[in-house]
Structure formats: C-alpha cells, structure tokens
Image 1 (cartoon, rainbow, N blue to C red):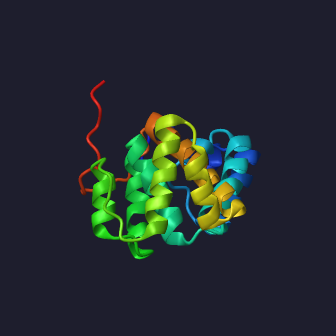
Image 2: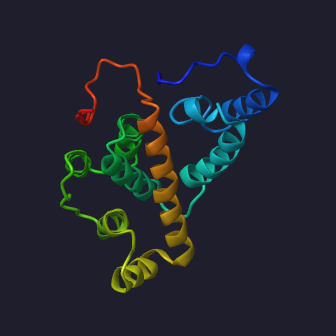
Length: 187
C-alpha cells in the first residue's frame, strides 16, 4: 500500500511506534495495511484504534456478512477506495451477493433478498444521511438484532467512518492494476 504520508521504517520508529507495530503484526490482521499506515505516526491513536478495530471486525455479535455490508455501506458513502478494495472480496466471501455489492459501489439502493441486509443498509444510510435513526427504524433494528448487537452495529459504522476518513485524507491506496472502485473527485 502507498500513501501521501512519510513512510516509516522500523529503524526510524520510536519505541512506542515499534510496540504498536508489533501488536498489529502479531494480531489477527498480521499487516500494517489500510489506516494503520497513517495511525502508526500517532502510536496513542494507533493503539486504541487497533483495539477497537479488532473488536469491530472480529468480535461483534453481527454475522460477518452483515458487518461487511455495514463496512461497504460506509466505504461507498465515503467513496473510500482502499476500504472498498480491502472489504469487497471479504464481503463476497461472507455471502453478500454480487448485485448488492455492485449497487452499493454505484451509489444505488440494492434490491435485497434478505431482510437483515436491508435493515443494516437502512440503518447505515439513514444514519449517514440524517445523522439520526428515527423511532420506527430503531425499534425495528432493536427487535431484529437485539440491543447489544445494534450498539455494536453502530460502532462498526462509526469505526469504519474513521477508517474511511483516514484513508481518504492520507490517500492510502493499494498498489494494483485494478481500476479504483470510485471516481476520484476533482480538486
């Protein structure tokens, strides 16, 4: 991966940066991809974000298919190239349909076959568009997922919005010949 940040070699890192790097490399991610290329510049942020990210990605009550859907809703909303590139194949492998994935990428509302997927999408889009979730949608989501899982779903949206903003600002990109999923905005 590349970014607009100064690349850090282990020999240039502070002891705190090295400690965080070791924690990331020894965890389930096993690499310094994505936002960690930026966050390693601030070991305090990297340390805490890494821990929250590990929970949001690997330990919530949401099935992987639904958490990856929430991540793709976020990546599409923010048009986060690297976030999409990383999570699109994971979402596909987790069982999210091609038509849903492509509609999200194009900024269109997918035709969902699964009610739980439609509900995750509605919660995410409503949250991003209005910065709230109305009482009816809240009740529907709470009944479908339970309160704890709904809290975790909102955490997934929030964490991956932070990831998307980080990736966009620091222009973190995968080095690949595959075209970017979203058009780059003109500056």
